[in-house]
Each structure stands twice: as C-alpha cells, then as structure tokens.
Amino acid sequence: MTTYRESGVDIDAGNRTVELIRPLAAATQGPQVLAGVGPFSGLFALDTSRYREPVLVASADGVGTKVLLASGAGRHAQIGADLVNHCVNDVLTAGAEPLFFLDYVATGVLDPPVVAELVSGMADACRQVNCALLGGETAEMPGVYQPTTYDIAGFMVGVCERNAIIDGTAIREGDALLALPSG
Image 1 (cartoon, rainbow, N blue to C red):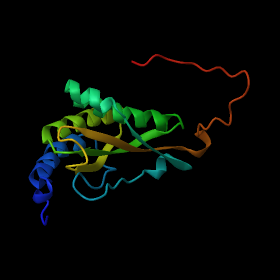
Image 2: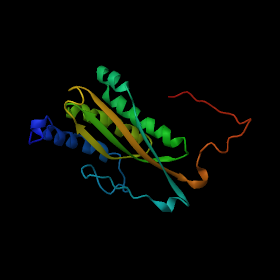
Image 3: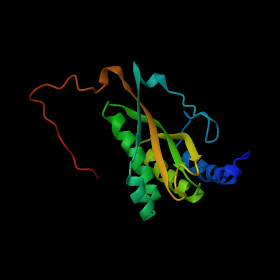
Image 4: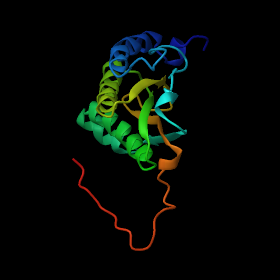
C-alpha cells in the first residue's frame, strides 16, 4: 500500500469532517485562542493578570463502553457532552476553572456527520462552562476499529490559584461532606 486510500483512510472524509467541526469549535473560542481548528497544536494565551500564583490543572478521560450505548441509540452529541463533563468534574475537584478542552476521536471508517455530532455535543458542553474547544485529533483506523464503531477521549486544562488548590490535605475529622444530585 502506497496511499492513504489504499490503506482504507479517506482523506476527503477527513477534510469534510474538519469543515463540519471548525465552526463548532470556533463558537467556543475567545480572544485567548490564538489558532483555530486546523494546525497541529492549539495555542491558548493564559491571562496571568487574573491570577497571583496560577497553577495549571490537567485531566484526561474517556467514556468507556458508553460509546456503544450512544452509538447504538444514535445519540452522539450526548456522549460528546458527557466526555467534556467527565474532564470538567476532574479539574473542578482540584478547585480549577476549565480553560480549554482537546478531543480525540478514533474510528474504523470516518463518518463526518457522526464526528460533527460528537463535536457538537462537546462544543455545547464547553460553552456551558466557558471553556474553549481548542482542537483535537480524528483518527481513521480501518482494521483496528469496526467500520461503524468509534472511541473518544478528552483532555482538559484548567487553572486555579495555588493557595486555593483542593487536594484533601485540609480535611479533618468532623468535617461534613455535602452531596448534591446531578441536574
């Protein structure tokens, strides 16, 4: 095999996917995002004037076998939002506010509308927490994944003040833990 097409990778579908997701990501980005969807890396200018001692907090997560349920139900946007919210919850536990999110979508055969629906859910969830969807990676891997299956992962970076980090060291006997139902 000497070409992507011969190996089962559809470059045209990849380009269509980027065109579908570009406006979704752009709708989450403010002036701190220095490069839109397309480059090999995302650029985010941290406004250090907002913080005395900023600490970056990072998380990587996936949604596991829930992708099978979402795919079977044709509810791709919801699983995209779920992925972002997994990462949001992780950085919140340290006391951080989300700054930006990166996604990874892997599939056997690229289906641009499905990926666009996934990213639509991610973008909606990012907007709800004032977080930029900075970019990501879409990988078409025939032979690794079945043609209609996919997997997703997400990566988030947040920020908090060093003196406001929640790390459990201040927990003492007699402290109360409050639990709230999810919405």
